[in-house]
Length: 87
Image 1 (cartoon, rainbow, N blue to C red):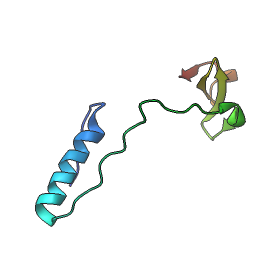
Image 2 (image 1 turned 45 degrees about the horizontal axis):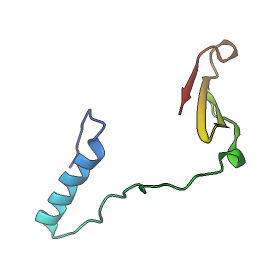
Image 3 (image 1 turned 45 degrees about the vertical axis):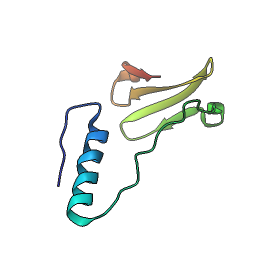
Image 4 (image 1 turned 60 degrees about the vertical axis):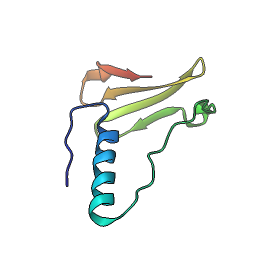
């Protein structure tokens, strides 16, 4: 069985379909999806801060004002001309 979706809610939809099919066809109960904590604990991103390198990107993890940021720079562009920052 495969579920293809173009939705940000694709994982819960796939879970519902698979859980229903497994229960109805095989009598198997699945564990519920994990739920993020309502008040998550902070992390110390400074321990992991730095630049990580792959064959395609230099990925830099920085921490500013209690938030962690990833900056992706394509290695094949001149001097990392384009950077993408993810908060």
